[in-house]
Image (cartoon, rainbow, N blue to C red; front, side, top):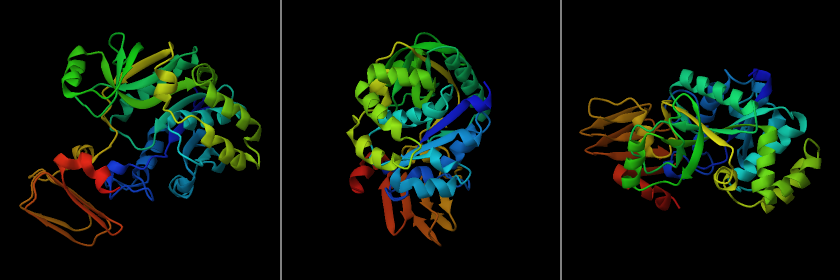
Length: 349
């Protein structure tokens, strides 16, 4: 697959509320250097796909309020490739908008759709997986989704059930599964043909437009009304009028669970959605007591298995905590047991 034929669509509209106060609606997690690498998650996502796609073929779909952050953090991206949603309508309308726009000028495009805020550590294996998926999707009207080989029973992710082993090879998808309870997750792990759903999709623009027309005709109808205004001075006004009329639905419900043309390819990618503080802690370097700290001057005394994230603070001193989150940003402070992190969305509401 030639790089010139490939386009990457990055979905960057979420607010990451489970990582409050680090991630807020004003500055959500995709624009933050969560791991202390010197790059935000969206910048790391761009870097991950540069081996397979030229920067001129990158697109970002985000909220209108985050357009300045995208332009600041990815200055190489073409300005008219930053697509500003006037209202959040979930992933199906988001993807439809990007793909209708790409189709108008690049009818032969092969497209990768990816979240902005995930982590992939095994980049060589990831690139090999993406190349195989691009070749397969280009050869027919097939959608490929990237699966993650699970290394533990996880209740926080959706799963993909494949017809056989999809590690390093493309297999037909049998079904998509919602987030399971622990007993079901253990059974999925034991079965060997269940994979975490990473929300990464590969398809040609012709394939996805046809699939949305077939399975989500309401959204397709809105996009067809929007289409004459794309790449014109009236695009923003038309989008503001029409986009909020789209059904609010995920691409999984709108297309993936209805189509007979879905395939999966999987591998051990060192993947995480970094969706909560426990996931972030797993990917940070820890001291001898299991603590991880991101900040200028963080001093821990008698602490064990804690995560402290305070990049804006001059000095932070924490004493006597075990399995806790301490995060400070923008005048907000959270001190919370890791065991209660599912309550953070409620705390910050």
